[in-house]
Structures are given as structure tokens and as C-alpha cells.
Image 1: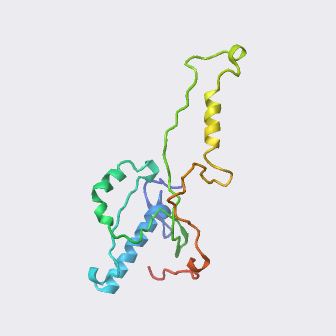
Image 2: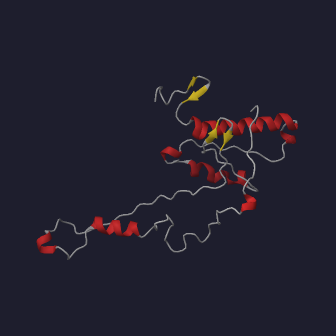
Image 3: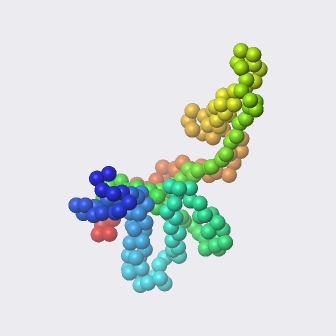
Length: 178
């Protein structure tokens, strides 16, 4: 960094700082788009859809508390037909990246244990498994060489993420004057 990443600065017409293109920029783009819709449509009653914003900026730290904050307010999302995620990047100065699906993340804790005391390999070698080796073996069975999860039933309720050719946007969308 040529500047302090946690102090956003304008340099030669560009904002420089941590998260400018991955989150802050896309959030501002969404806000500007809704502002434009409000101006063009005559206010809130002119919007073609209901719009709600939920900003969560702690994904880099595990998003602690985010779920607990949303659970009592799930009614906010009743009837939701579309969610736009702002944690994406821009492909150029006027070309944002539209995210139509994300892979997600799972957090888990795994514990492998062995004998309570160190055992001499000359006397006990082969009689007991090495816990680190067991852990490597377990982890090696979770994912295949194409990064597909091998846990039975894991994909049971997951939609097919591949788009048919007719579903892929055929044109670039320009953001002129925004």
C-alpha cells in the first residue's frame, strides 16, 4: 500500500483503501441505482419492487452476531425473490460483476486424539495410529480432485448452479452517467 489502507483517500480521481472495490464500491453502486430508480419513478411508490438493504461488513472476521441479529427479523425477507450480494468486484471502471450465485462456507471443528502419552516407535510403532496421519486421512476423504464435496447427501438440497446458454446475459450492461 502507498497509503494507509484503513483511511480511504482520493488519488487521481480514484478512491484508494481497503475494501473499495470489494464491498464499498458495489454497495455505493446499489445505493446510487436505487436513488436513480426513486428519482425516475417518482419516489417509493414508483419503484417496481420492494427494496431492503442489509449491510454486514464483518465477513473478514467471521460475521459474528450477524445470524443472531437477523433471526428475530426474518419477516423482513418474506416474499423475497432476489438477493444481490455486494461482495464482488468490478471488471472495469464502468463494468461491475453481477454475482448470481455463491458457493458459501461451512465452519466446523474436528478433533483427533491418540494415546495420552508419547509412545516409543521402536516398541509401539505400528501398534497405534498417529493422530496427525489420521487427520490427514479424514480430510483427504472430504473433497475430490475437482473440489467436489464427498460427504453423502451434501448436495441433496443444492440447486444446479450451471446456467443454460439461454439464461446467460448476451449483452454487456453499461453504467453511463452513474
